[in-house]
Image (cartoon, rainbow, N blue to C red; front, side):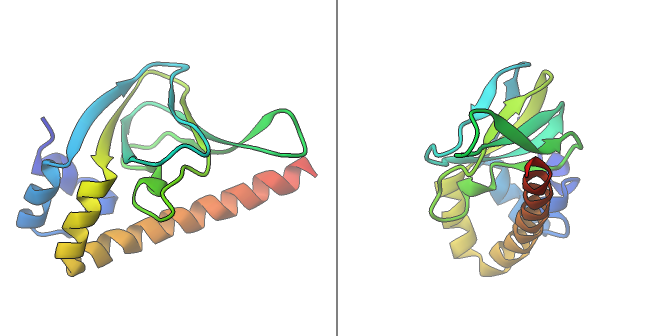
Length: 150
């Protein structure tokens, strides 16, 4: 069971009041991903966002100019977000996430989370500010990885 204490230690939820954390716990489920297992594939409808609790997940994108995909990120620190597309329109995963080691993650239902954030704009602002930082970081990492392939 996911607790408010677990959520309060994650940077995505940093500074949220106890009642907000309590509302979020009902949307979270702990999941296990085994080495080699794919969490989601690029282009699939994004229904969930994940937060790493332990393990390693790589983020890869498929280049149209090459048959192989390239790794644009490695998620290996507890609290890192993967699958932010579960909350961001048009809600399609922009990459493929593969577990490189047995991993534990929190899975957050996108639709339910968006309803909660719309009902509580202050909480929504705080969380989306953190998600914007994640997106910005991933964009920089993707740019660097793509430039290395040229």
